[in-house]
Length: 163
Image (cartoon, rainbow, N blue to C red; front, side, top):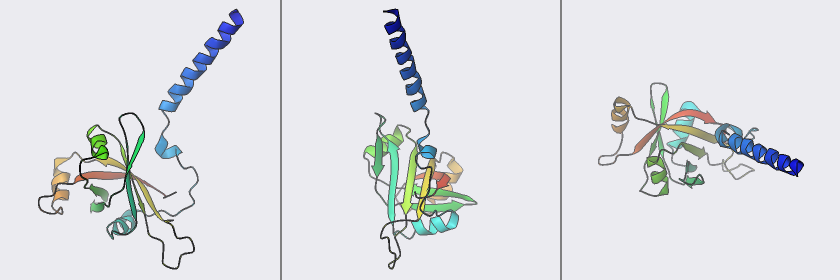
């Protein structure tokens, strides 16, 4: 009987350690360990995003911890050497997640060339975003927003290959 209780206690302890380890996993850096597709960065990425062709998505986290992905076209701006994503979206689950402090990740996939053998996005970027809170930077970014339109702005803090 003591052996069974000891084994059960050991299993519970192992489960608790496994759960704690799962909570600290960084999904951004561990999701793809091998990259088979190209990566756009810097001005090349900004120009591609601002061409308004390609595939766009922004991922957030729902309050229950499940993923949420939103498809919408966004724009990019540059101040100095820093790139910013301009997000404009009507109120929905993604905006609720943003208001609740969810981290965001954006994806841009460039359209394949007309003569490409593989007719899917194989070049682009995944971007880790951080909300812009600096009032001076926000004022500068808002200068290019259409009148009466107040988008959300996020700094691109990291770019990674598309996949």
